[in-house]
Image (tube, rainbow, N blue to C red; front, top):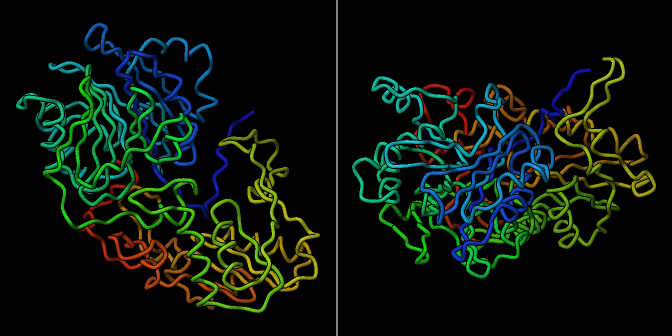
Length: 478
């Protein structure tokens, strides 16, 4: 028997989700972090972990449980019980790019150093990891992982030696690191959140009774009955201690570059960040597609899950009925048992099945969030036609991918992107669609309700930070 990861090569993955909790009344936070990670599972299915401490107990004592797999696979009632008894903690769910899928790279990272302990959870990617890592290695640092998160942790620990507080050390470390990072950090008596000055990925603050929460998405706050307070500002460091929330905004700048793909695909539809609803953004993307790429059809369908809201928006704008043409298997986890090679089935068919009675004899508009290599789109179009659809018109709620991402998304190199070497018409023929239309780059700002500052480098090549001169994504990913 062997275990194989059920990866779809045509899907884009986000790197991580982070969650932290500090109950000022001393109540246990393990279950809150556990359920918060469940709500963030879509952001990473490869590994997860929780680190817990007690602000009223021995300083520096941290309990940690980490493992490979889904939250439901890694945590049991028994190991959750071993973590119980702490009122402060951080959690992490992770998806890695090539070369980083192993137990040593699981988070949170826990460091013991001269000033005590740090537990760190990171979402994003640094662009200057190689030079920072070499600098640390030449001064005697020994690394236990291949992830850039450890570089961040080392720099915070080193800056702490010359700082009055750990939050000051975080701010000083942020002046050295460059790239995308949303951080949740636990020290013996404080919970700290930090977001890079561009605000690539989200981080928000919530509160439930006298417990403060830091999380990647507002959906995770709702999962633990916490009230949304506000987003952490791009460049801001927030510190939570027994006296409440404190803020340092010295690194905040007006140049914001939020990842536009958070709105298109990554985030849950019931999430809002930086004042923009993910659900409304996807509805608007569908409306824009109906305006710019209209077609005569009988039914609009979305590829679950992120395509559904855009399909509804297309239907609302065009007046063509919206239908549910796909049944998604919600119980397909990250792994499956692989029997004989000849018995392997397409991962697309394992995850999706077409309701033939919905599409038979109809002209179908199929809405999806992206086309990466084209393999999945071709299979889904074929499934619809095999089910009796007379025409399949494909509409994509993002522009064509043309460039790799260096900020926490595993968009591959240009040569692996179908749009990099093929025209829209060529792609249409390759996926056997009757027509194909993408969201125009110029309409991205309309999708999120105005030009509020976002990164669209994967579509345009206009990187807000100079891309690294050497490959960072295989070996030093977050």
